[in-house]
Length: 165
Image (cartoon, rainbow, N blue to C red; front, side, top):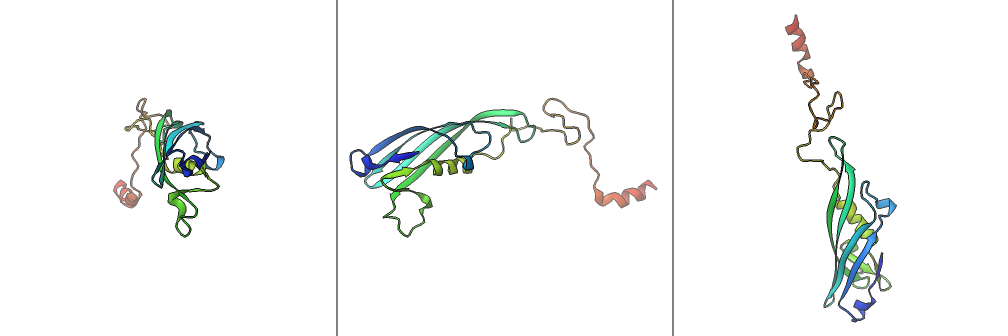
C-alpha cells in the first residue's frame, strides 16, 4: 500500500486518514491469520515531525498448542513510525523510520514485518489447558485417560535391580 505524501509535504493539509485492507505478502504470511487485515489510522505532521499511527484487529483461527483444539480470536496491533525524507537520513540507520521516496511511502512491508514480530507464536484454548496424554493421545480437558504416567528415573536402575534381588 503506497500513500501519497504530497498533500502534507506541500502544506495543503497536516493529516491524512488511512483506511485499507492489507493482504499479507506470501513471504510474511502468518499461518492462521485471516486475510484481509483491516488497517486504520492516520499520518500527521507536527511542524516537520511526521508520524504515522495505525491500528488493526487481526482475526485468526489456529490450534491450541497443548490440546490441538481449534480456537479463534482477535489480536490487536498498534503500529507507530516516524516518517522522514531520504535527504535528512543520509548516514543514519533507517530501520526506525519510514522513508519518503518520490513523495510516496510504502507501508505494506513494514506493517507485515510488525505483524510477524508481534503475533503470538503459541495460543492456548484456555490458561489451564491440560493438553493431550503423552501415552494414548486423549484430550485431558475432556476427562482423564487412566494411563500410568510415572516414569522411573533411569539413574536409579542399578539400585532398583539390586533391591529386586
